[in-house]
Amino acid sequence: MNDYELFIKINDAILLEFDVFKPWEKTMLLSTQNQMMDKYPLSEEQIQLLNKVLNKKRPKKRRKK
Image (cartoon, helix red, strand yellow):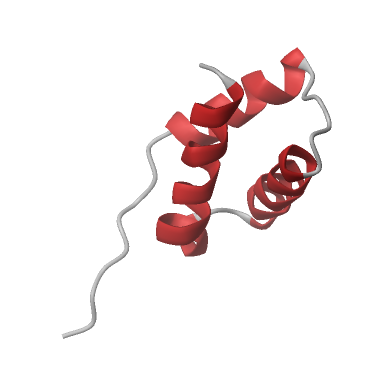
């Protein structure tokens, strides 16, 4: 996955699923997004952890009736 695809995936997670992440995951997503916008390189460990967070199964948000 190149940097552009990862950035799009992070943005989608922030915009569409932000409320289902744990606090440390939210912090990591936002700091990584800022790091990528400032064009700082990501380490291999950061990319692996991001992929784990973005790909894990999360409960779907229930709509109020």
